[in-house]
Image 1 (cartoon, helix red, strand yellow):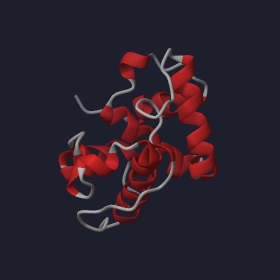
Image 2: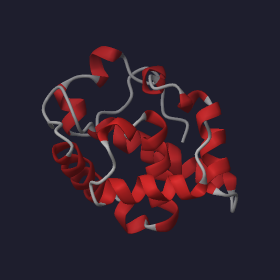
Image 3: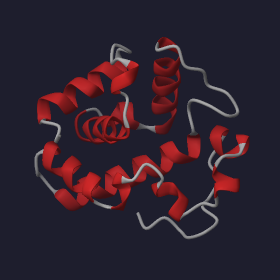
Length: 141
Protein backbone atom coordinates (compact mmCIF):
# COMPACT_ATOMS: atom_id res chain seq x y z
CA UNK A 1 0.00 0.00 0.00
CA UNK A 2 1.42 3.36 -1.04
CA UNK A 3 1.63 6.07 1.57
CA UNK A 4 -0.14 9.36 0.87
CA UNK A 5 1.38 12.77 1.53
CA UNK A 6 -0.79 13.04 4.66
CA UNK A 7 0.38 9.64 5.93
CA UNK A 8 4.00 10.62 5.32
CA UNK A 9 3.53 13.82 7.32
CA UNK A 10 1.81 11.88 10.13
CA UNK A 11 4.75 9.48 10.33
CA UNK A 12 7.28 12.31 10.50
CA UNK A 13 5.31 14.14 13.18
CA UNK A 14 4.87 10.87 15.09
CA UNK A 15 8.62 10.33 15.06
CA UNK A 16 9.28 13.87 16.25
CA UNK A 17 6.74 13.81 19.08
CA UNK A 18 7.29 10.08 19.81
CA UNK A 19 3.63 9.23 19.23
CA UNK A 20 4.08 6.93 16.23
CA UNK A 21 3.23 3.39 17.35
CA UNK A 22 6.31 1.18 17.26
CA UNK A 23 4.55 -1.28 14.94
CA UNK A 24 4.28 1.51 12.36
CA UNK A 25 8.03 2.29 12.43
CA UNK A 26 8.67 0.17 9.34
CA UNK A 27 11.34 0.36 6.64
CA UNK A 28 8.96 2.47 4.53
CA UNK A 29 8.23 4.71 7.53
CA UNK A 30 11.95 5.35 8.05
CA UNK A 31 12.20 6.58 4.46
CA UNK A 32 8.94 8.55 4.72
CA UNK A 33 10.16 10.40 7.81
CA UNK A 34 13.57 11.12 6.28
CA UNK A 35 12.05 12.50 3.07
CA UNK A 36 9.48 14.64 4.90
CA UNK A 37 12.04 16.04 7.33
CA UNK A 38 14.57 16.83 4.61
CA UNK A 39 11.93 18.65 2.57
CA UNK A 40 9.89 20.36 5.31
CA UNK A 41 12.12 20.56 8.39
CA UNK A 42 15.73 20.36 7.16
CA UNK A 43 16.99 21.67 10.50
CA UNK A 44 15.52 18.53 12.10
CA UNK A 45 17.26 16.28 9.55
CA UNK A 46 20.82 17.13 10.57
CA UNK A 47 22.70 14.15 11.94
CA UNK A 48 22.96 15.46 15.52
CA UNK A 49 19.23 16.19 15.66
CA UNK A 50 18.31 12.92 13.94
CA UNK A 51 20.49 10.95 16.33
CA UNK A 52 18.75 12.52 19.33
CA UNK A 53 15.29 12.15 17.76
CA UNK A 54 15.67 8.49 16.84
CA UNK A 55 17.28 7.56 20.16
CA UNK A 56 14.48 9.31 22.08
CA UNK A 57 11.82 7.68 19.90
CA UNK A 58 13.34 4.23 20.44
CA UNK A 59 13.33 4.69 24.20
CA UNK A 60 9.80 6.15 24.23
CA UNK A 61 8.48 3.08 22.42
CA UNK A 62 10.20 0.58 24.70
CA UNK A 63 13.33 0.07 22.62
CA UNK A 64 16.94 0.38 23.64
CA UNK A 65 19.96 2.05 22.11
CA UNK A 66 22.94 -0.19 22.68
CA UNK A 67 25.96 -1.68 20.95
CA UNK A 68 23.66 -4.17 19.24
CA UNK A 69 20.21 -2.59 18.99
CA UNK A 70 18.42 0.66 18.33
CA UNK A 71 20.01 3.70 16.75
CA UNK A 72 22.62 3.02 14.05
CA UNK A 73 24.80 5.99 13.06
CA UNK A 74 26.27 4.62 9.81
CA UNK A 75 22.91 3.51 8.45
CA UNK A 76 21.28 6.80 9.46
CA UNK A 77 23.93 8.89 7.70
CA UNK A 78 23.80 6.73 4.57
CA UNK A 79 20.00 6.83 4.57
CA UNK A 80 19.89 10.61 4.90
CA UNK A 81 22.36 10.94 2.02
CA UNK A 82 20.26 8.58 -0.10
CA UNK A 83 17.02 10.40 0.75
CA UNK A 84 18.61 13.77 -0.07
CA UNK A 85 19.77 12.42 -3.44
CA UNK A 86 16.27 11.10 -4.19
CA UNK A 87 14.74 14.47 -3.34
CA UNK A 88 17.23 16.31 -5.54
CA UNK A 89 16.44 13.96 -8.43
CA UNK A 90 12.68 14.30 -7.88
CA UNK A 91 12.49 18.08 -7.94
CA UNK A 92 9.06 19.23 -6.82
CA UNK A 93 7.29 15.87 -7.17
CA UNK A 94 4.91 15.06 -4.30
CA UNK A 95 6.55 13.12 -1.50
CA UNK A 96 4.18 10.19 -2.02
CA UNK A 97 5.67 9.77 -5.52
CA UNK A 98 9.26 10.25 -4.30
CA UNK A 99 8.69 7.63 -1.61
CA UNK A 100 7.05 5.20 -4.04
CA UNK A 101 9.97 5.57 -6.46
CA UNK A 102 12.52 5.14 -3.66
CA UNK A 103 10.80 2.00 -2.37
CA UNK A 104 10.67 0.57 -5.90
CA UNK A 105 14.45 1.02 -6.17
CA UNK A 106 17.16 -1.03 -4.50
CA UNK A 107 16.69 1.17 -1.42
CA UNK A 108 13.31 -0.46 -0.93
CA UNK A 109 14.98 -3.62 0.36
CA UNK A 110 15.65 -3.42 4.08
CA UNK A 111 19.10 -4.94 3.56
CA UNK A 112 20.18 -2.32 0.98
CA UNK A 113 23.23 -1.21 3.05
CA UNK A 114 24.75 -4.68 2.57
CA UNK A 115 25.49 -3.73 -1.04
CA UNK A 116 28.03 -1.27 0.40
CA UNK A 117 29.18 -2.78 3.72
CA UNK A 118 30.13 -6.28 4.74
CA UNK A 119 27.77 -7.50 7.46
CA UNK A 120 30.79 -7.97 9.75
CA UNK A 121 31.59 -4.27 9.39
CA UNK A 122 28.11 -2.75 9.43
CA UNK A 123 26.88 -4.54 12.54
CA UNK A 124 29.79 -3.70 14.80
CA UNK A 125 29.34 -1.44 17.80
CA UNK A 126 31.70 1.02 16.09
CA UNK A 127 29.46 1.35 13.02
CA UNK A 128 26.39 1.65 15.20
CA UNK A 129 27.87 4.41 17.35
CA UNK A 130 29.83 6.42 14.74
CA UNK A 131 30.24 6.72 10.98
CA UNK A 132 32.15 3.84 9.44
CA UNK A 133 32.75 4.14 5.71
CA UNK A 134 31.47 1.40 3.40
CA UNK A 135 33.99 -1.38 2.79
CA UNK A 136 32.47 -3.09 -0.28
CA UNK A 137 31.59 -0.17 -2.55
CA UNK A 138 31.34 3.59 -2.19
CA UNK A 139 27.90 5.04 -1.68
CA UNK A 140 26.60 6.36 -5.02
CA UNK A 141 24.95 9.37 -3.44
